[in-house]
Image 1 (cartoon, rainbow, N blue to C red):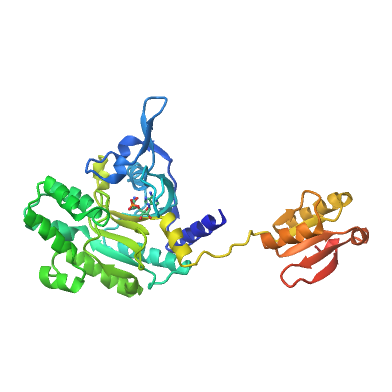
Image 2 (tube, rainbow, N blue to C red):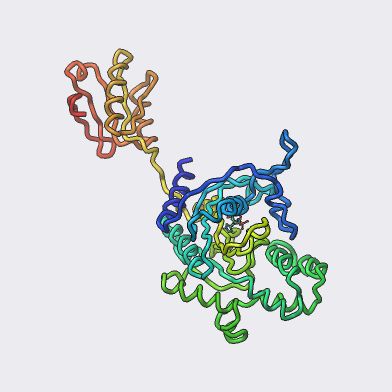
Length: 403
Ligand code: HAM
């Protein structure tokens, strides 16, 4: 918990430093909030059941639909743009593997009501801010950025219709996890010809924004949006963290524009976080659309990475003082001293059972307390307590009043 709290405190500090407000939502939601029909993995991984009122409910696999539901309910009264963050626990019935568990926490940051690249870049910056806080630099991780409109444009020019586009993205997202033949089979079962598949493959292999500018021209909406992201990222000084990669589409159906994911540069782990723009989610819930973008950043992969890089800090327990009564007759005195220290705002661990001095020293070392306050018979008689500074190992006797 100490490590988790440290991680979450850094999530929160990064979000707070960008002026985001924390929100929460119920863990249990109706199943229909997630029943999207485009074949996404997430909708097949629900921890769902029927409750006593025969309602189909599920533990949330992600936070975005809950957030959308809440925004929709108050769309007219919420001041836009909305900048909100949360660290929900999420459940997905996945095959457990390194970096993927059935239960995880996911830091979410979302901006609603802002349709420009400023919003995406703010999110990218917040991710960088978080990495820097925990001691990770741009030689260790990067953020791949793409725009779904790029592939959409290429596919539409090849005659592939709009309905096929989202399922194509979902298949493409699985490309580095399943064999190429299977991907090709799945694409052709959507009705794509082998020329279309080749076109997709050549589009995905684009890694250079300059050549895309040259081939498609900067009037192209996808190219234009990507250029804006890079321009703004330059102003923020984060370009060393980001790279263009046309193969990043992310596996969720609702993304409509910019998409991104953070990755470790040693290439051993799965995506550290993922997100993007989703401007049309509200209309799938029957509301009027509001432009939105955000990301989800899990606690699992980042902890694997921090452990690989040996960056998990030694975290003290947070105890200032350990108070110890030398014998049971002094217990009341020890309680009095502990009480006084606590009233003065100190965090005090009072030793509750009879213990040998050796045990107390060991315990003090383990908990990394700052001082050991010993209630000893002779000193107590004179209204004094013995204080050992555990950092420099010096001892002094002080009057009870001086505590
Ligand atoms: P996602 O790409 O499904 O996006 O997940 C985002 C992140 O959550 C992943 O990159 C990973 O860090 C973590 N994650 C997901 N599943 C697991 C798991 N089984 N075990 C450990 N970590 C996991 C979403 O969920 C979107 N709702 C994010 C978003 C927010 N997009 C816009 N706003």
